[in-house]
Image 1: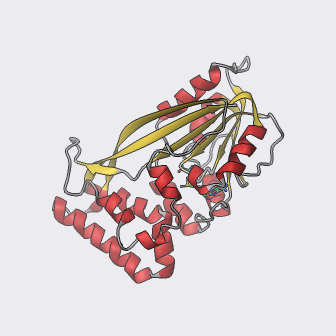
Image 2: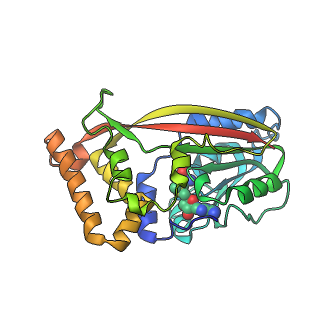
Length: 274
Ligand SMILES: C[S@@+](CC[C@H](N)C(=O)[O-])C[C@H]1O[C@@H](n2cnc3c(N)ncnc32)[C@H](O)[C@@H]1O
């Protein structure tokens, strides 16, 4: 069974502000892997890429330079609406669809990406659907990252290094983690078997500048935080207030947007060839 957790327009708004695009080199690696067996057209572009569980388009838009047409599919209308608001590319489109049942013909897709979402799908149904829509030698690229750790801007550990991780798994939000699927993600999908002829796995980490304000936005984009808001609004707001105070007192700075740090994410990239 797939999961429905990103249906709320408010969450889609926080999502589009808070979630990073995957590192561009993971996309170029996926393109290079595709290029090993399928060459682009005479205009140096491949025909069709699709990004499933596209959210608000974090990964979808990175595919724009390489394909004649890119479609980001998401099951949530709110996410698709938010993605459309931020889309200015003529060759990028967004549409509502389950990843397990795509409105595309057999053997039609060069590259299929699934970023930060595989764990929400009915995986066996999705793998079957990926095999159906991919061209021979087409590539499924699965990308996922863990909860970021926080470092000082010169990359030293902080007393707050594990703050996001501890909040995610802490007493308040833990009851709202709606499945053990997130463990699969946070383990870099290493426990998942990908039923494809050729599979290549890689792990990289990225360091991105962030602020305490960004961190609060990120927490607000989490599905477990949004569930907490719906079930126990005052506890969710108190959690945000406590986190804000933790940043303010550690950095002795009242303005969250002026508290700068590094967010380190560990990414897994799994490339599967049909
Ligand atoms: C954590 S978000 C990832 C969004 C984006 N790909 C990113 O990298 O930030 C997961 C997304 O998967 C979508 N989703 C969950 N189950 C789905 C399914 N079965 N088919 C399509 N989309 C699904 C959710 O609506 C949500 O937008």
